[in-house]
Image (cartoon, rainbow, N blue to C red; front, side):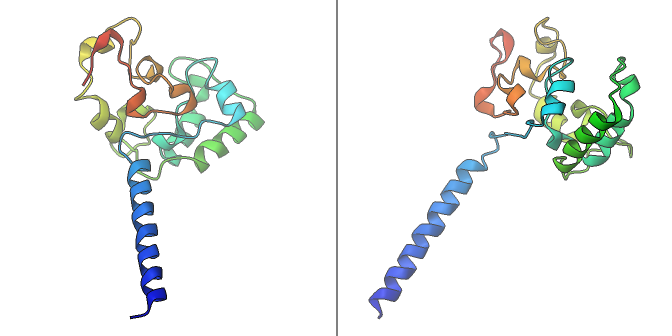
Length: 166
């Protein structure tokens, strides 16, 4: 037996155990933090109308569809000058989710229509929460996710109005 080799093996096992433990804590299902730090995106989309939705919650095809219809963006003309639109679209595409978010073969235009969102919210959020005037709809992420404006959707930051807890 070589003592140096045994010490190296033991050290390697500690490193692997520490890395596995750190990954387990950082990859917890309740820790959802996303990039929403693009200045033009935050300004044009995240302050004037709604909070800056995390690009990772839609795939690139969906973001292209959303950005391609800004002249009729959910009942509002949200048109942008070409340079701002191109910069924001590049940010959204480069940070888009890798999961297919299409609905019935078409790019999803609403995060609340994606299978992942429906799995996380539809069965767990009662209709009476959505009827509250301080919530109104699933589009109002900040009503429950208190740090949503910074891209933090972790479960530890959820405070549902009216005291409802899952």
